[in-house]
Length: 442
Image: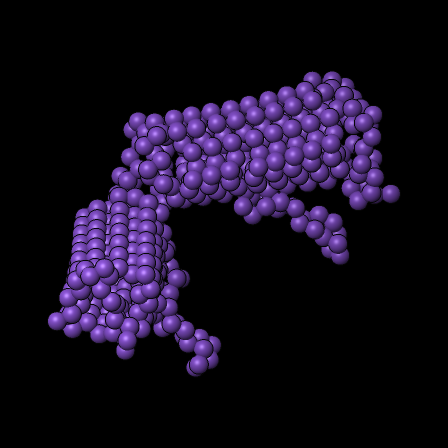
């Protein structure tokens, strides 16, 4: 009879549910193994079903739980240092005050778990996969996104040096968590409670911190390169020596170069430019090749982007107040809710982008998106806005002399006191003066 090699005498396919007596016997043997006593045996519960088991305070250092189902189990105060929990299911488990230092949690699921005051120092919480069963009935365990902590309580955890790249921490309570030197790059922390958390020297590059609470958080030395964050919330954090924008500005030139290579090689080389937030005020980007670049919520006030190639670029919610975009090509670009007050867009092209389809008649057009954009006082003389979406856009005092607005969508757009002399419209689509306020058409 084939048996597993975990000392239980049970096959991983059958008999993988242990009675409490069997479990505690195996733990006693593990304690003897840890103490190097004769007859001791390392605990190996890989692929076992232990839902709801009570292991409060147990010494489980270096134990093996790879692929085990530990959902709703109680590990409160347990010692799990250096334990193998690869691809284990810990959904709903109680790990409050447990010591998981240097444990292998790659690919584990920990949704709705209790981890208050737990120690995860140097724990590995990255992605991982485990294939179980034979070739005819194989099943995959694990995750490609890092440990899923969604819905968990993690107040006061010690996560110093933890590897948590791409972990799912949406809405998680991390109040007063110690995450110094942790790797949280590309992690989803949207809506998380990070109040008074210690994030000094933490890698948060590319992390999603939108709607996260950071009041009183310590961010000195943290890396926020390409992180998505509402910078107004940072005002309530302890920034100390953090320079959120310095790293962005220092590396931006290299990113622009890599993006140019990416474009010219059709994506085979280089890297797409992706920037979420950051200070690039006054940046010199005349003639830059930035097609399909992502520059969301970036401050480009006063930037020089004359003749820049920005087709299909995403500039949503960015600040381009006073920016110089003369003759820039923004066909199909997104300027959703962008701030373009007094920007200069003379002879700029914000036309539709034609996207080839699989059949001649399947070609699609992608309009420039200026929904809700603030274009107060902007100069759009001679600009091509054919088919542009200007719904809810504010063009008060804007100059649109000789601009092309054929087939543009202008529902609820404001053109108060705008200069529309010689502008070209679809028949019957010209905006009417609002409340008697002037629109110049001559």
